[in-house]
Image 1: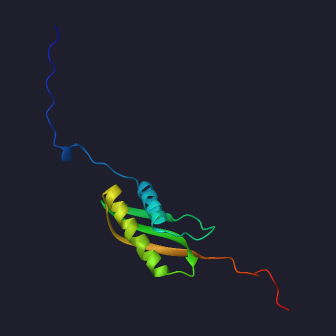
Image 2 (image 1 turned 180 degrees about the horizontal axis):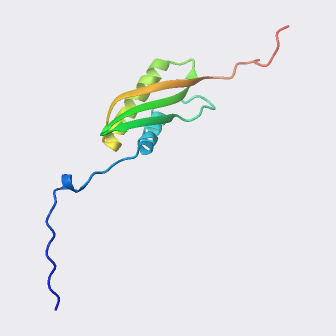
Image 3 (image 1 turned 90 degrees about the vertical axis):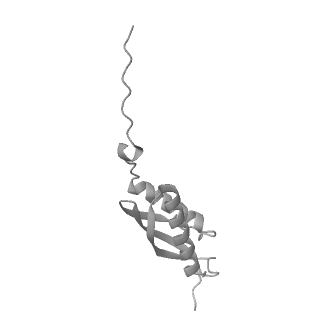
Length: 120
């Protein structure tokens, strides 16, 4: 007959350890959120790219976009900021005090007609 093992002492959850989410994972969340926020992406545009710096539970996010032009650039950037902050806070449980949006390229909504023609 075996002797029963003693029950280990119960350690409160807060003292057992911590979960750390890598910066690159938070950046992927931010890039996907930026993609979701752009309802009409520019034709042939590269997908949004994000970089993140995490300090404790605070994430500072930078998103690089290519946007359609002409369009309301300020409204698109505001939508991206709002959606990225919301998603990172929701999925990674981090505060997002700022989301910097850089517009890398402006893409025309339609190719210009006769663009390759020369004027004589």
